[in-house]
Length: 140
Image (cartoon, rainbow, N blue to C red; front, side, top):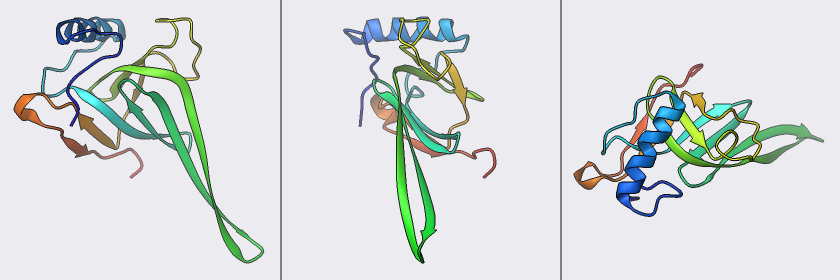
């Protein structure tokens, strides 16, 4: 179980202030303790993506094709090169990264970007514990 943290924050108080400031930047409401999102999984452009606080957005796509009577499976991986700073719940969820305009780092993702996740993992916050919820994805 992971306790709430944000990259670039030295302590819990600074993490709370940064979390609120990033929510203001993203134009969304910050979640209360116990409902803060550690990671989400979602599908976009044929890839299954994971966005986790403190990590790069990463994805993978599996393909199968019949070649000379044999089924060949391939896995293609992708990474955004930008690190997730915070994720905010909502409809849709909002992901803030360290890409432009926060830093000069380019990214193929807008910053912030929004998605409808298929899986959500919350930070551990006292008695709340690590929670995983399955949500309906569009098209499923």
